[in-house]
Image (cartoon, rainbow, N blue to C red):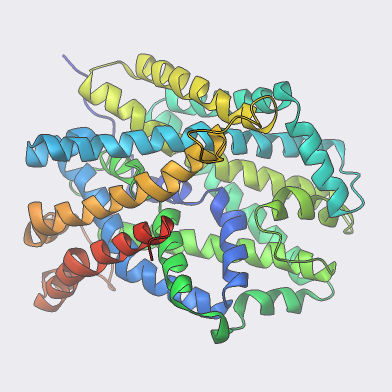
Length: 459
C-alpha cells in the first residue's frame, strides 16, 4: 500500500517554495541585463503586461493541474485526458526538467565556487583579470566537476528529506535569507556615488529601443522566469490540498519573482555605474565584472561574499524544484520510494551533467551534429528554446480546448480565497470568465507560438 501523498503545511509554505522555484540565476543577472538593454522602464512595462496576460493564466493552470490530480506532469495529463498524446506532453515536462538541471547544476557549481573564492577574498584588479581567472578555473575539469558535485549533493540532501522536511524547510529559511541579503545589497548600492545613474539605466523609459523583438523578448522572459513548461509548478501544486487557494497564491508568486528581479537590477547596476564600467556585459556581468567591483568597495569583502551567497541560494531553490519533477514522476508512476527515486534520478542527472561540465575544457572543441554547440550549449538551447515553449503552448491548448475553461474556473473556485482583491465573487463573474477564456484560448497559445518561431529565427 502506498503512503499518503505529502502536502505543504500551509499556503505560505507553498508560496515560498514556488517563489523559490521561480527566483533563479536568471533573476539575478539576466533580467537586469535585458531590461537595461531594451529600454529600461519601457521594457519593464511590457514585461509586466506579459506576466499578467500570459504568465499568470498559465501559472494558474499548471498549479491547478497538479492540485486537481495530486500527481506529477505525466500522471496529471493521464488522469485528466487518458489519451497517449497528452501523456507524452506530460513527459515533455519531465524531460525539460531533466535537461535543464543537467546544465543548471554546472552554473550552480560556479556560484558555490565563487562563494568559496569570496571567502578567501577577491584580488582581481579589473574585469579582464577576473574574466581570465574564470576561464582558467573552467579549464580545469576537476574544478568544474568538483563544484558541480558539491552543488548537486546539496540539492539531493534537500530532496531526500521530503516535501515538508526538505522542500518546505529549505524554502522557509533560504527565501527570507535571499530577500534579506538582496535588501542589504540594494541599500549598499543606493548609497554609492553615482548610484542614480544605475537606477536611471534600469527605470528610465527609452521607447526608442522598443520594437517587435523587444515584445518577444519580454514575453519569453516572463514565461521562463515563472518556471512554466517544465512541470515544476505542476509538481509543487500537487502537494496542495483542495482548500488551498491558487489564484491569490499565483499572484503572490509572480509578484515576488518580479520584485526580486528588480531589486537585483538595482543592486547590480548601482555598483556597476558607480565604478564607471560597462553595464552591457551580459552573463559575464556576474563572474567577470562584479567580483573586482565589489571587492573595491568599502566593506567589499562582506558585500562580495553576500552576493555570491545570494546567487547560490537562488540556484539551490530553483534546482530543488527542477529535480523534484523527475522524482515525483518515479514515485507516482513507478511507485519508487522517495529515497530510491531521488538517488536514481539524481544519479542520472548528475552523470548527464558531466559532459556539460567538460564543455569548458576537455570537450570544448567537441560540437554536436554540426551545430557548433557544445553539450552545455545544446542542453541550454533545447530546454530554453524548444522544450519549455512547447510545454507552455500545450498547457494553454489543454486548458482551453481539452479540459475547457469553464472546468478550469470551476476548479479554481474550489480553493478558499481570503483576499479582498481577488475573491471568489470575481472569479464567478462573467467578465472574468470571458477574459480568462480569451487569454487562455487565444492570447497565450498564439503568443507562446510566436516566441517559439522567434527562437528558431523563423520570424
